[in-house]
Length: 576
Image (cartoon, rainbow, N blue to C red; front, side, top):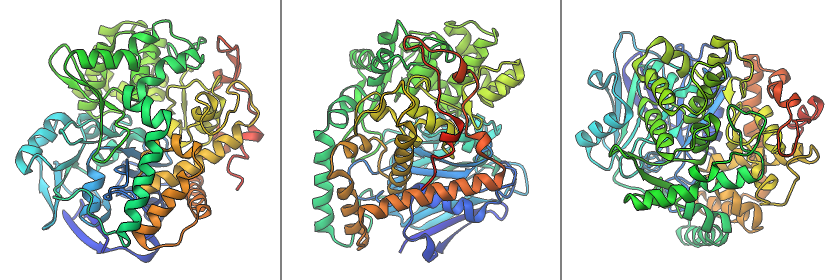
């Protein structure tokens, strides 16, 4: 039977509980957001005792459904002041599901100073002192715990940034090789984990694909069909497996929607190819790395990579958003620099998007010059040291802007927006502005229809159709995040009419249900309603569903467009 694991940091206890009936049909983001809504006071201090960290695998996680190993981490965000779900790959979701753990709830704060860890295995769970891990980076913490408990354990941990409770801190998980580089990075949830005195969680499960399935034959047939759907699509079956997410670099630059030098007024980067997926694959393979790699077992897209660096360390992976924020966004065109900045973030426990945009604001302020790789590395290295300059940077782009009097800060609800300029990818602009999560491309990835012509085409430079596009994608994304499936399955699902029914078939076979496609749509809508209700209670309003002013006034070349979707249109996104 599925169980909750409730970890009380004040009492130092870890106790299993039966799952109340209202949560049995929920998983992933649906479960984390509902539990945050039910158990966390919307007006609480995100770093105070009343906030909670909810960690949940998806509904399909732990089965052999292709690409279903995603993990949701939820809480009240220190960065946005609203609800947050951050999503990670790695092996931990599958391990939790195979221990029959539907969610872990981390609550309370220790009565005394120090650091703790939680060990979870088939024998039970316990809270242990972890003072020996204080101040260590995530790579070292994961290596120590894999040495102590076995090389196949999953490790969820924070770096120094989380211990300092910086708003740019994320929650790290590891892949099968032990790289602590699969991140629930966004929204500062690493700071929430740090506020609980919790340095790490070790998940020791001998099984990967063995969660209960009621109709195994029916499930197997549906899983095979879904894998075929993914492998036959040009994006999920060819583009991502060959060049990873960074296959987008040249595409987005050519489309004129690549943010350059802190979202300046040119949407193309003349050296985009130097930091592209094609270039990354070439260099990685030449150095003995991998152009393709699975972040968790059972992923058929394998869009990750293994990039050996000149200093002998390995950065696995370099994702598109990271290549952009440490590359074109800073005026840098050296993949080795991108990899080094990426590695520093992974080790310190930082969200790469938040740090890349924050560095761009630092450059906008003239503290360091655009294009100065050495200065960017030096600035980022200060974060793990806990220096005043490091703490300013580690608290994110909005904090840096306030510290230096800069208004050109690309953030919504306090969270930095990523690698698609909303002036020429306007569907994404609607998502950035209105998502309950703050500036987040994964909340409703309109690049599909705006740029890639997946699931139809909506002209990215025009206002028409963008609200409807974003609305439908936000609903679908919330539902996908509940299943534990990787968001990238959406590319194939949007183009194949059998995609969504096949997901429903897997859910029905696993749980003995009779869901229909409309039920999945309703699930997505309900998740968004729950999240928006929490945000409203926390004090957020339609005023917060807006982009920064400069996007409305400064034209972006080469299309010479601004974000021109009216406020009253943005306010209709959630009319369902």
